[in-house]
Length: 275
Image 1 (cartoon, rainbow, N blue to C red):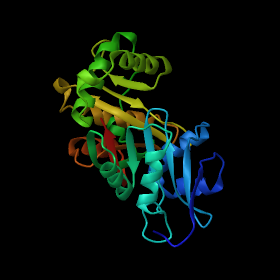
Image 2 (cartoon, rainbow, N blue to C red):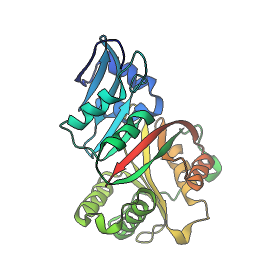
Image 3 (tube, one colour):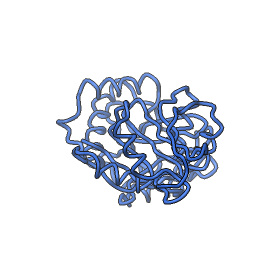
Image 4 (cartoon, rainbow, N blue to C red):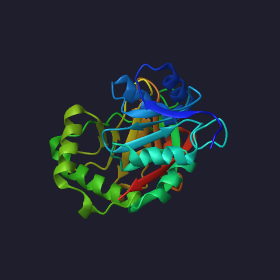
């Protein structure tokens, strides 16, 4: 335990101390920065002697982002036990946590829940200036209603291979509602003919922290053709600012594709996904 007086207070948008924590977190702070800019400030700040040392942000999709060098620190910070105890008593429900290894590992030990994923994630960043121009394509498109079934198959396959979520556990109404919402708001990009798309990705969190790419998937029969790298490069080339994503450290094929597209690794975090 640190010697100072520690306390927990609500997370508030426009708080200078929060802004400093988010900025210091680099790419890992993008989710929180975008959320606060959009008025989504659910969470808490951990302080020692009146100085903000870390924070926990709870997202609407059951995601928890922990950031701050003072979380789990041996000195001048908030001890792991204090953070974990508060999170266990929190009123916010979460299923996936991303943050410093010490805190995320301690959460896994404290929770009596099925664990689907517990691993390191690597952040990548890029922008239109780093996009591999040789890979940029002019046939990248937003999906059509005729793409619903392929998008559903892609999501189920990606969940199974990357997150250990069996297709039978995915609520189909939720799945198709999500797909329809993405088609309507234009936050998915694909390659391939209508109804026969070969590769897709989604735009996740977006705002002043950058645009987050997620859900990158290529159907098995179309792999080996560089489609994922081309799709990512094309999205980089058309982005208004910073683009980032995170991927399992073990997933070398995906990491090579992102690097070919023009992205570079920049930081890591630990990820925990509960069943």
